Structures are given as C-alpha cells and as structure tokens.
Image 1 (cartoon, rainbow, N blue to C red):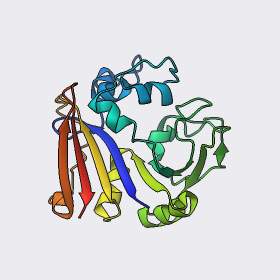
Image 2: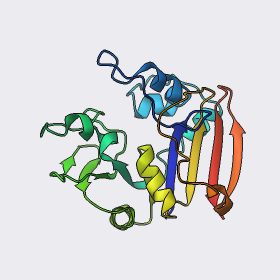
Image 3: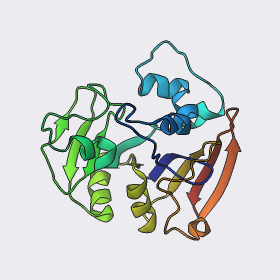
Image 4: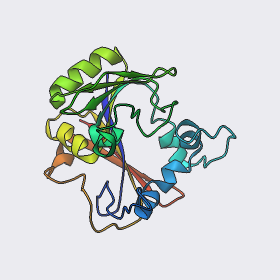
Length: 214
C-alpha cells in the first residue's frame, strides 16, 4: 500500500488561488492552474463526464491516467468537499454531482461529522474528526491492499507530509506565477532529503515532479 499525493501547483509553489468573486466562485486563476490536467483525456472523461474521447494524450495524460489507478481510498479536507460553503446545508452532496470521480471510500476531515453519503458508482463519503494518523489507519482498512490518496486541499497535504506519512508525491507545476495563496512548501523545509526526486516536462509546459520515498 502506498500513500500518495497528486496536486497542481504554480511555479511559486501555490496550490490555491485567491481571485474568487461571487460572480466567479472558482476564479480565473484556478482554471489557469489546472488547465493542463483538466485538458487530458482521462480528466475530461472521469471528472467532466466527457466520453467522446477528446483530450490531450501526451505527457500530461500519462500522469493523469495514473491519478485513479490503484487507489482504494481517499482522504480530503472539509473545504475540498465544500463544507466551508455549504456546511449548513444537510442536503449538500459535494461538488461532483451524482457521479463523483473517486469510486472508492472517501474520508472527509471535519470537526462536524455528518452521516455518510453513498453513491451508485462506489463513492462513499465518510465524515470524520481525526488526526492524520487516525485517518490514515481507517483509510488503510477501507483500501485493503490498494493505495490511499491524500486528495487535498493543500493544508491537509502539508499535515500528512509533516507527519512523514506520504510515500509518493506528484506535483504538476503549471508555468504560471500566482504571487499569493497557500504554498505547498510552508513548514516543509528540507522535505526533499527523504525522497528521490525526478521531473519531466510536458508539451503544455507543465513540469511533473515526483517525490518517491527513499
């Protein structure tokens, strides 16, 4: 079993954006940050529901196609599920509609647990108040011999990295500068010393950096 992270970041290390408005709740910068990944065949099909076969098939697709492979459970923060915006709505079922792309059990870390939400495609959201170690222990039980992915957001990813719980991290570094946001690297000085680091540049200009535990 491997504990893994896959995340999109900017050249200056930011994994969140700050230009959201009521009219544009995602902001323009988010689209710039994830454009190369969202444009791949895998992500268009799995996340956007586009079954036409459209999408890029180069280096970005190579990494995107591995995003879901071998994953038996996922851990995410409350914000990634949308509880920061819809925490008072008992009928909120997440950003992804009735066909979430995960298709495995997902632990949502929150201080306000709620009943589990189950979907026909195998996705089940479990809401838990747990430390990284506790959450990983439960996710590992749910995943069996398969991998556990730390889905985000960036604060959750940093907590698992700080605790030394991550075996592999893939960062898709978009060729953009955001200048502000939440950095993946805050508090993680010298992280690379415990990992073998490799990189590959895609046709989009995105640099795929992989940290694999030594």
